[in-house]
Image 1 (cartoon, one colour):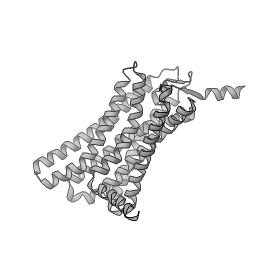
Image 2 (cartoon, rainbow, N blue to C red):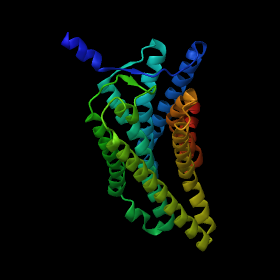
Image 3 (tube, rainbow, N blue to C red):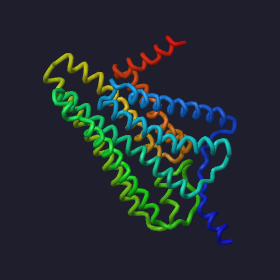
Image 4 (cartoon, helix red, strand yellow):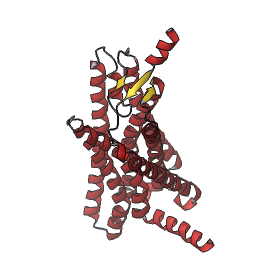
Length: 311
């Protein structure tokens, strides 16, 4: 009997997505095709950058981090969600819930830290072009990549650990997937520490992210303005526009989620926005970089031209 109680206590009930019965399969197949497209496009970009030696440049190697993050972040959310939609099973084991919390928050955090190091790369490329090769070495790329992931994982690790220290008195997750706020709300203990660190975590991430990107792009704009070099300006637009668009999409999606939490009377819209936060940046990033970045775009076109030639 004790074993049964223990098993039940480790099972949590997720909130319903709230899709009408008639829309279940259309929504399911839409999300499935979007997820498959997201995985294929991001893996395709990673493989192309690894295989093509001409793409072994810091900008593209750093972009691989973004593709890896998009694949992992969406895999933590969409496959379980798709399974729940078809099976009608909204139960999740506590350990699986914790793993999803860690994955979801790492995805959000790493999106910021990776775009910070990509902004640093663009700053060096535009403002110190003659020293770029000496500064952005293979070691520097690895150091920046590891730092971005380590900082994100450390913040999320502390965030989740503070929730795991609490005892549980509830078994219903007030969300259609597990996030940290839902996790610590399972407790009847005082969660002031969790709320304080959650606020600290958000402020540190947003201030460091927005501050770094703002400073680097203001410096780049000043350099382009003062030098009035047409070639430099063209290079800055080509290489920075894609990064800035990706960053703004990610930031906009994140802000909408925060805003929607203030409107509990629109639960379905809040859930929809949470899904879009994952799939929109992950789906658009390869397209934006593939179209906007000339060298990468040319390589993609070459690959498709070869395939047509063989067929």
